[in-house]
Length: 311
Image (tube, rainbow, N blue to C red; front, top):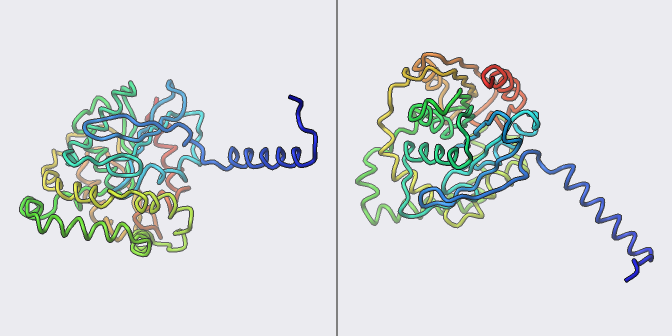
């Protein structure tokens, strides 16, 4: 069959080419390879980007977020230098949340170690935000031989150590149903999610369509997001026992927003003092999501830290 030569064909081809080039040019770097693997009872969604012989960086998001929260950071880091491993925690993003699963911090940390095993990763630097920072610490405590260093952003350690009377609350069918219903109503509301994002940041102007699409839309589109939140709260009673933090001797760098309304700066200072080898940098005019509000500040310090400890 001969190729059409009419003007419409060439016009359509040109438009297609422009669209293709636009997608390639403006697609976020580092989000090209998406995979799923079964760990425990859940299908875990992750991205493994970069050469396998590059030093691996495991990036763990916070409660209610997903791996797309790292987009601004990855767009500012040299893609050719590191191996980036991003993961959706169970019940977040594209990862599932099964009813009979376990969702304590210790169990989640162990599942992340299993992910490293599947990917044949022996040792990593972990970058964790909020709950992700807590899980990063848990991983280092459980398997110190697997963790080279920790870069923690607004780590929620002392503020997420357990819901009071959770055993009684979540064993009661009426209370359990009520909690799931409230969670679903909150997580199904664009208005409430927008308000939550506004509460999490200092500069409300950064809550643009891009941020909403990356952080809030996956919650709205996940019919089981309320159930996942319930599981995390249900198993929170198992988080109150925290091993001795001073037993960690690996390098730790902590960054947190001075105006963080969710994890107070006093908690971060207390956490820093609990480690033997931790440095802390306070970010002014910044709330609980420095990776969104102050990505340049995060990348500047992260690059120095990673270069120093990835040898």
